[in-house]
Amino acid sequence: MVKTSFYQYALPELQALFLKNDLPASGPGLLFNWHYKKRKSEPCHIDLAKKSIAFIEENMSFDLPVIHTLQESADKTVKFLFKLQDGLKVETVLIPFNNKYTICLSSQVGCAMKCSFCHTGIQGLSRNLKTEEIIGQFTESQKWLSKHRPEDDKILNIVFMGQGEPLHNFDAVKTACEIFLSQHGLSVADQKITISTAGYLPGLERWKDEMPDVNIALSLHSPIKEKRDKLIPINKRYPLEEVLNYVQAIPKGKNRFVTYEYLLIQDFNDSDEDAHLTGKLLEGKNAYVSLIPFNPFPGTEYKRPYLSKVEHFKSILDTYKIPTLIRATKGDEILAACGQLNSKA
Ligand code: SAH
Image (tube, rainbow, N blue to C red; front, top):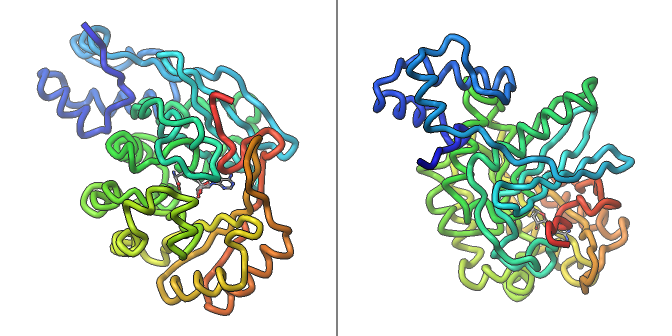
């Protein structure tokens, strides 16, 4: 009989499974506490009823992705290459800030979006990640940190900005978020999780009713159709106006913004006109802009603009009263920066 992974269950689903099999209702909470709060990998035998233990042994697996290789850069960024059960590999990045970390998770092996500026896009899509493979990137990175950097082992933020289009793998990403958010699970606060999308409309349509309360980031990169079409081919199928309508209709808590990521490419989308059109598009929309200077990778035709140009672009957005941050590039010497992940390279 094929076992199912414990790590694929949000708490209500595990409770339903226990109920269906006539097992004591206290089991799921104990298991969540054991594996997520106490960070144990071995099966739990404490406080569980005998028949629950027997059921778990027969029906559940606890395998997680394993760290295949890792690279550390001088700025303390860590890039993990995880090996999955079927031998495929996927990357995860820990990005340091003030002795804590943001974890950049992958949602797919490769990606189907084919964005022209992205190293993962070139790789194509191999398959979706399962919930347990998303959760495992977090728990195994966390264990590595506790062991190797115990003095600063806190992962404070989760961003779905690694390989893959998270909304193209909606169900697994959604369940993973539920486990991250659960008080009995990993207890990450909702404002600390951000899902970044290229504007995958079928996922955005489901977000409002189905996705737990997490932040959204839209990869905008250009307000001009011809340019966005060239950068993000799905723009031809899912036009920006429609995407924006859905993004802005996502309910947001107090003081929360939609993040718009703007990748700056030299002499392509970094002119004053590009900045003014972006300012006009986002003015008054509770927007926060994250400017990302292009990170080059082998074989790309695009170039990163000079910092002075990036700062000038920001100064134009400032005149529209849009809060804008220039995203610091971390880990680029180990190809761990945005858009440089490619588990086949
Ligand atoms: N598919 C999702 C999430 C993965 S990409 C999305 O498109 O949003 C995460 C962020 O990295 C996106 O904003 C993406 O546009 C950006 N990115 C991709 N390639 C990049 C590169 N070469 N340099 C800088 N940022 C890049």
